[in-house]
Image (cartoon, rainbow, N blue to C red; front, side, top):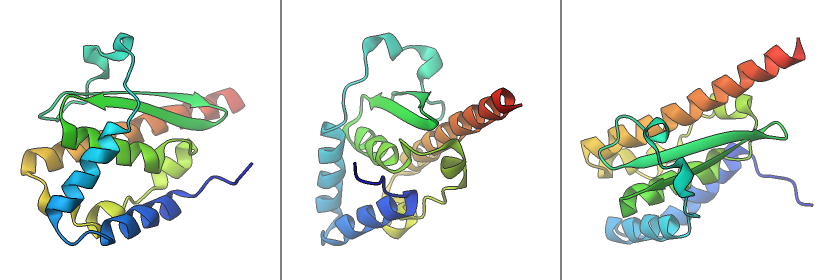
Length: 148
């Protein structure tokens, strides 16, 4: 079994992938394609408590701890947002709560994402990151409680 890549390694992969595109139209197309590959979320998870607050679009996100790693699942009704959430899942899913909490997520700035998103989308992206880190914090606290 191959060793899982670290968060910074995955971030670097994404930066490299985005460097292949010359225009933001091509980059948006790539983001949309990533979103199309995101596995649909089961309808049972599409409820208010799983909605990301602060997103203009509807985004549902759930997570669970599996073998000490946080696994995220999400879906959105907007194609660009679906692509953004799929990138975040690619970077953060299947890592320990501590790795997720410590993640700098510099790829967002390196690929120029913040400058090219509308303010509302940028806020939504930050809301998704915040929720993912919050989930990781909760899992880490649970792990520490069970360890004691």
